[in-house]
Length: 264
Ligand code: C2E
Ligand code: CA
Ligand code: CA
Image 1: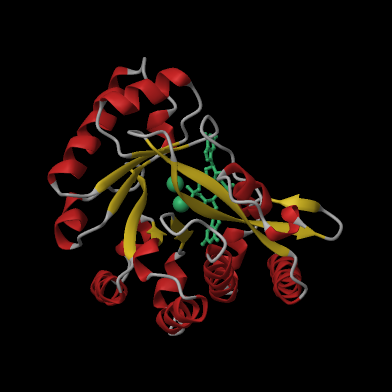
Image 2: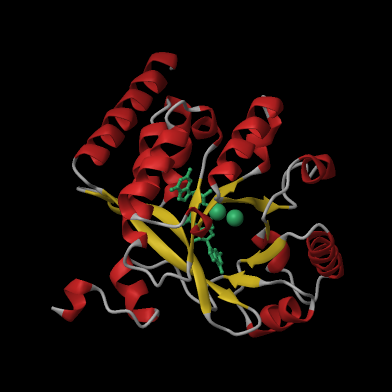
């Protein structure tokens, strides 16, 4: 059984290496919308795999494999370079959020990949937001905090993703000045009726604002969720209601900036 599992992992690993080499990976863009103006102020890039036989695959079925086998570093560097290259075509006021996995934070190539990609594409570092989860902070905390500080010195922003689902240790918030907290969709989706989720969302919004962090609510699917979020001081929303993850060409249409190939 062990041999079978090792073989299965090796096969996914080889498949993923091929995916990077054959440009089978693609970034989708999900709008992040200001609760004040209703305008798209940024996007999160979400990886997809155009598999030659299995069709379009979401990250849920391969990111963990990539993390376990270490390929995530290669895949993550690709995602960063791709996101920053595509960012040239986005309106200049928009921020671009990229997910960073735990292993990537430890990778020696992370900082140089970011610096090079920002410079190559002439992107203001302040537009790039790295989204990390608490699991990143739980191992090797000192190293990780140093690395995050190093990244902040370059000028980019750091967001704490899926907030409320992990240990949500408040000491992390004290020890590192996150620029943004993203309230996990599991709370948002029970709004407005579930009293517990409503209290948690309110509390996170207050916490964020008193620590001068921006707050994004994720997973907004209904108008009543949106109204609740607007009332309770969240800065931005991201969810199927305000826009699903879509390919770049579609995202450019949505933002009113036609893609070159759409214009042609
Ligand atoms: P995440 O960072 O929490 O990303 C948000 C996920 O929620 C996305 O799933 C998105 O499609 C989904 N979502 C957004 N709005 C709604 C909504 O209103 N309702 C519901 N039910 N879902 C919504 P996706 O694209 O399948 O990504 C899953 C996870 O894979 C991400 O969770 C992230 O942890 C990881 N991931 C995606 N792209 C990358 C990447 O480039 N690098 C790394 N390391 N991880 C990535
Ligand atoms: Ca994220
Ligand atoms: Ca999230």
